[in-house]
Length: 470
Ligand code: NAD
Ligand code: UGA
Image (cartoon, rainbow, N blue to C red; front, side, top):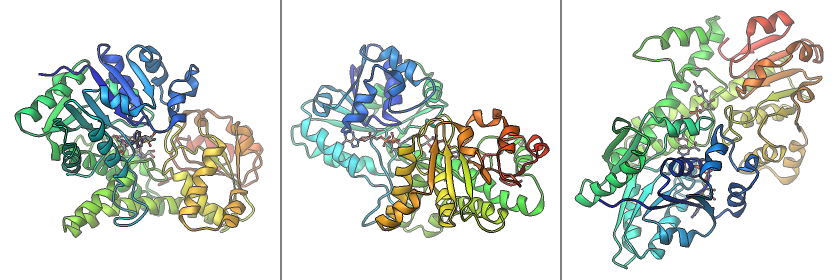
């Protein structure tokens, strides 16, 4: 059995950075090099100031601090890192295609393919290639074909080892995983490669936490896990609309059903809609795959999860407009939170972006405060969406002028008509809501898109408070 001594990871993003930091911390005898084409990102990973790491995750800075420079390295020298490694993780982005065949549905695998081509070109000794990115089932076959075309007589074993960490809890998820999943070929050399990766995780996880399967089951399980999680959110969000119409309280309904041990309490929190880089993209990818394999009923079933999520974001924005007497034109709406969830600076597919779009379309001014997201990022998010929708530069500039950002929450909410809570940052709960109320136009509305505020307390202050499903 080959003991892994040198690991390389292609992609220093939300997955590559934290995952490799955890491996380096737990496996001091393995050299781990994380490489990326983005020189700025690598410079930030190497920054002496740990507040400058490109990703905010609780506990990440401490882990990086312990391992960096000892056995953990960040570099832009991709070729050298590939050449030296005996195991290579591919953790590059796999966004939804924005062009051509499968546009808006299929995963764009061009970055993964480029990695495989580069590995094939550079390698002169046998290597284990690990799919860490989320990929459509059967991608390992494509990778194997590209790698085998190397022509140097090098043997590549392709493993699937999807990542299940959630942002905001990445370090905890990595160090105390429910499970890791490793899929590989069921051949003697495939099984040997699986064992090499099992040995890496066995440094800190028990055998029960390490599942091994065939490669296709592993690839498909990742998409399935995300689809199941997102489906629970869309299910409770669908019911939140019925709660609003009937005066049932969605949090009470969630508690009532979640205490049934067969259903369980997690992922039943009604919200303004799920965001993040993966749920939507992975379900769309699943839908695309089902259509590809001529399973239209299965495709339609899963697509509904995304349709319901879009509806929820739109419904939230519409409720703000109708509550504010059917127009928000010229009104100031304060956003508390822009990130797609708390404890991260990631804004990809955040519900806040879509709610802002609807309100700006109706003429509102949006005044945003988020503890970890910068003005540049907020404006770039909106610009990206408007460019995708084909708006002219003039129109985009006009709309961007309707967005204001603040470093202090009290400034964002000052003299506003309504506050919308878009991220569940803990600090929002502890605000001096009495002072906020005094400084707002009356009636003062709060739209709690995350149901984190104390409704009774807020109503007693004088707020018109509207939660999701309440
Ligand atoms: P990301 O965009 O944060 O990071 C990807 C990085 O890969 C970027 O920095 C990019 O510059 C780099 N890259 C692209 N092509 C490269 C190449 N040829 N060589 C070297 N670097 C290259 O993406 P992410 O959020 O880390 O996600 C990566 C993958 O992991 C995706 O498939 C995603 O679905 C999956 N995933 C993400 C999460 C999450 O919480 N973000 C969780 C589980 C799985
Ligand atoms: C999710 C999965 O939880 C991870 O297991 C997976 O690895 C990851 O996607 C991925 O493949 O990228 P993540 O998107 O980081 O992780 O965060 P989640 O905690 O799953 O939250 C996703 C969204 O759902 C957030 O907007 C969150 O606010 C929302 N959500 C979550 C709800 O609206 N209600 C809930 O009950 C739970």
